[in-house]
Image 1 (tube, helix red, strand yellow):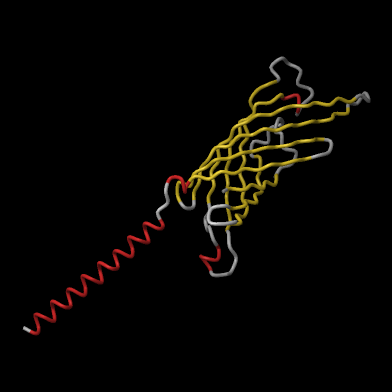
Image 2 (cartoon, one colour; image 1 turned 90 degrees about the horizontal axis):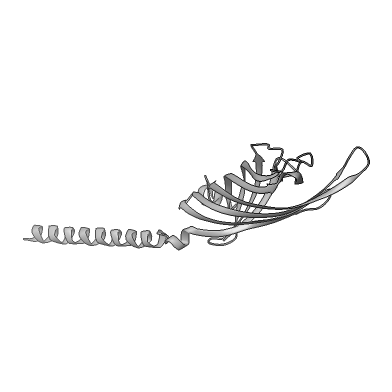
Amino acid sequence: MKQKLGKSIFFSALILLLTSSFGALAQEKIKEKKTFRDKIFFGGSVGMVFGTVTRVDILPQVGMWVLPQWAIGLGGRYTFRKDRYNFINGTSNTYKAHIWGVSGFTQILPIPDLDKAFKIGIHGGPIFQGEWEGLYMDKRTIDPNVINPGNKGWVHIILAGAGYRFPLGDKAALNLLVMWDLTNSKYSPYTTNPLLRVNINF
């Protein structure tokens, strides 16, 4: 009788322990589970260059974390650009243009937080980004020798790069990226290659 009672108490305690454990795990999963709204982020960047070439860029973005370490998104672009060209005959001309565009991008965070992974006291982690841009522009802004009537059109650019992601809160972060223009198009509005890009997501 005592043996049966002991087994009954043992199995009851085991069931209670397992139930408590599964309950705790379920609560953790509920806490970790993110809603669709939590996966969506907004952001972008603003850039300015002054000199022989004056350029002002506004690049809004919206994206979604498909996985905790992989995001995809869409972006827009508006650029005001002014170039001054000096010709051999001593004359000069100034071209002004408004560039409009759309983009698609993907981001990968192999190690989202170095401190959580290695306990080194450094938060944030490396980020890799690939991007396609479609820009509608007047090509004479970049190449004044374009004189045909179809000088306005789309220019497609592929960018790829890497950098560091600095967390600014539970969701917000600042991304510092070095991006390369892989297409190297002569109509690219970028004045340097690679180019430095700083954007904020929230």
